[in-house]
Image (cartoon, rainbow, N blue to C red):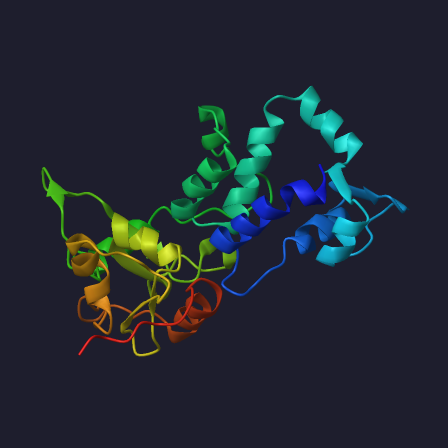
Length: 256
């Protein structure tokens, strides 16, 4: 594929799913070659002409999968889905993964989603969700939503402040109970936390409906609901990581 043809798509993906800081689409196109999965050539010959956008365009840079990797993927129809699953789990929270797959037009079959144990990889602690939800007394720490059906909590998640994929531990100091809506917005950088555990809302968020006002914009400057007495508060180091790596834009100022 030509860099010229994919530059816009790469730019959009990085802006939506990449880090908050500006990242050029030329960087992955050039540097993926160092991982041995990507081959770049141009009018100047084999090899990348560099990671500058202008150079990639002017030399008609083209990229493709390494031929050996491509042959391996074609020989095993299940390998692609398994590789996608490993890459997703290593880099993104589950609440973000489905959005990214939709954007890329990738449909994983059930066998890809089964997540068979992979030797040498860490596994999430299955007790983490229960510990977090109980500690926050079965309610969202941002809006207080406490849905139940047949005395069972629903639509409540244990959100990692520092993503598990980024080394965030499955401990209460790195978890808060959030409803599904606020968990999604927290992982997408719309919502964040200040060092004193007040709620931040990104100035990039737009919403004019009454629902947007009630569920998002009214959270500006509100205190995060703490866990029940005696339970660990969210650690400031994890909050600082989320503010640096996930939260987008600048915090909105509360209306007078």
